[in-house]
Amino acid sequence: MKTIALIAHDHKKDEIVNWALKNKDILSKYNLCGTGHTAGLIAKATGLNVKAYLSGPLGGDQQIGAHIAEKKIDMVIFFWDPLEAQPHDPDVKALLRIAVVYDIPIATNFATAEYVINSKLMK
Image 1 (cartoon, rainbow, N blue to C red):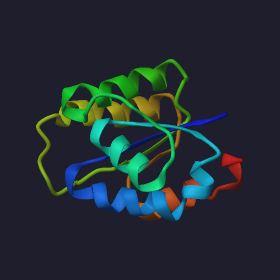
Image 2 (cartoon, one colour):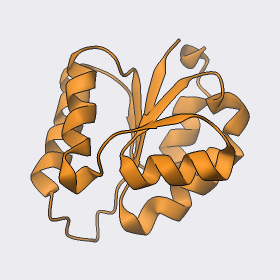
Image 3 (cartoon, one colour):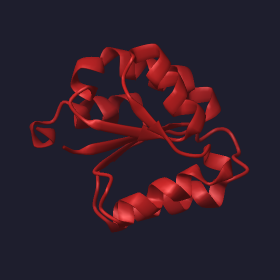
């Protein structure tokens, strides 16, 4: 079973929760994980089991990056806020870089997440 990581910056948490609710039936077919608060919000809103790692600023982005390198994560949905400075910006860039290095899909907005999650390649 494939594993999807779910991450969102503070101003994008409502958006990823709404996206997860819209795609709850599809997401139920995957192992889900995410950074701290995001994972908790999605689990509470959808009733899905979402394994929570640390929050992004406390190392959660790095944990997810490590699991990508270990080939334990197959896709990342990361609703990031390009207009807000992040104190852990180097970690965010490292996570984006590791997803590209290991050639896994990484969706950084609602439209791309829709394309990827509904792709016949995800089945």
